Length: 66
Image (cartoon, rainbow, N blue to C red; front, side, top):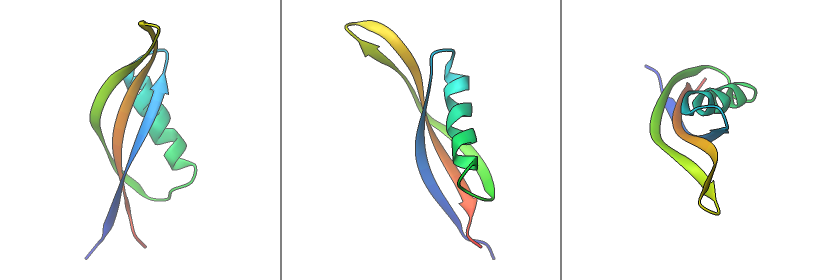
């Protein structure tokens, strides 16, 4: 039997939503072991003064408890 923990992360990118999600997962991989699944929960854009600043991807990441 296995147990998994799920956390939500927000990645940002000036390139694309895909890159924002990738940034979140790559950063999580630096401090979490055993990442299993990454699910895109929400996509949005950061605006300042009505102008685009960055793509944002909210990502749910699961990893196995050891």
